[in-house]
Length: 250
Ligand SMILES: Nc1ncnc2c1ncn2[C@@H]1O[C@H](COP(=O)(O)OP(=O)(O)O)[C@@H](O)[C@H]1O
Ligand SMILES: [Mg+2]
Image (cartoon, helix red, strand yellow):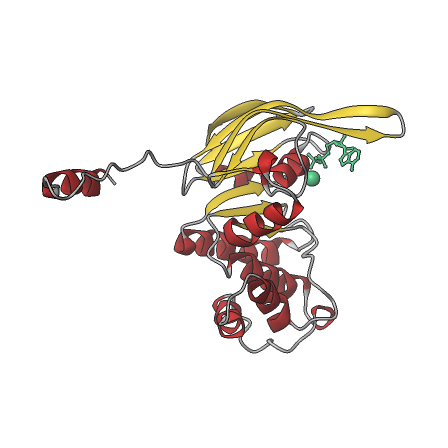
């Protein structure tokens, strides 16, 4: 970045305006995030004044007790839940200014999401699960691309299988292929190994780290596993809707 900036200033001339390299934008830039939800017992404050800045390419784990707000924070960052206050700037987009259609477009172009329970469409084959979201995003090479992505997660021989015909680990591989097919700037994973046995979970995590690195995706990973959290560049702990620690490793 610095090299190209100095190269461009050296090569600038009177006829060519100098190009100024803008500061690298933060994929996640959140300030004063508040989320409240109405329940039967009245309004509950789920997220209370969250500040969070994550740099491009960082791998960040999010840990904390059940109910501390990890999934809620991930849903706000993904544009699947609207915050009630604060600045929510994700991959350069102010999510609080986007309507539902805008948020759907934002997700298609910038974010890949992996859930604990896979979230595959049961009536669609592995190939269709990966290809159709890309086709909705207007890509004409969606099926070709989906074949490549499924081969990259070791499922080149399972393209026509339905989720019900695949093991849990295989279903999560399909979900990973789907999440990463568009080379997203941001990969969000919510306990992606929570429904898998230890060994299968480990292979999924290896694949997830490997693909995120190859694609250059910034990673926010919710996990209960402290060993896994420690493998990330930075570990954030939540409790009762606030961030209680934010440091390198765990
Ligand atoms: N749709 C909802 N309506 C009301 N309360 C909710 C809803 N979703 C989550 N909560 C509450 O928000 C809090 C945080 O939940 P969650 O983000 O799922 O935590 P975590 O992922 O850390 O377990 C919990 O107290 C939970 O009961
Ligand atoms: Mg959760």
